[in-house]
Image 1 (tube, rainbow, N blue to C red):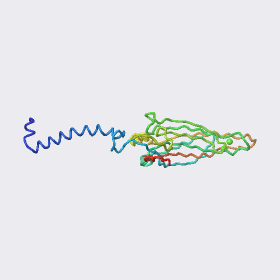
Image 2 (cartoon, rainbow, N blue to C red):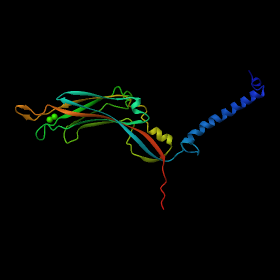
Image 3 (cartoon, rainbow, N blue to C red):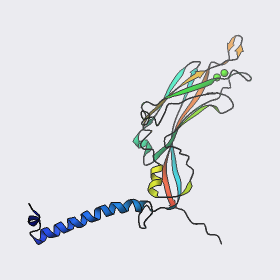
Image 4 (tube, protein in one colour):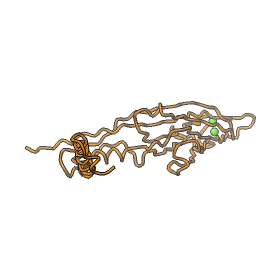
Length: 230
Ligand SMILES: [Ca+2]
Ligand SMILES: [Ca+2]
């Protein structure tokens, strides 16, 4: 089929013209889009400007308590599925273990706890974005225990700020990239210390309150209002 065959009727000529126009406009459109996004040309939806970026946060808690004797261990799990994350992004996940040893008469002989995570079933572990951690703490001072935090979104603080950028760039900055889904697991081990009182065991165990906390957020991008000085 030659050009003459293609262009042998007005209808076919019309179709060919339309195709040529489309082929011409199509690259122009895509050449223009990135410029529009960066705000270099006006009229793009993602025009660069000064934006106020803030975060609408919500949290999901899982709490449990356990009583452990010296050397006892307890495994705790926090299941995060797509439904738990919802429309948001995961900012961070915390494991908070609290204890308050007041069983011994007077100071000293404090109990303590240590914990180590097992995140092999968490999205992002295999790629090294989310790593296992361990921590320990004594059960004294009214806020005994330890807290471990994993940043799922890099550098997430939740603090609002203003920036001159494009909305697209801002949205791409605040993204958990699908990481954090899976079963967050940790094992805690108790160390119980008892004051040596002849004839009785003063302290044989301790209560541990375990809290898993997931903070999710949605990015709110608003036009920064110009401050006018009068
Ligand atoms: Ca003790
Ligand atoms: Ca105790």
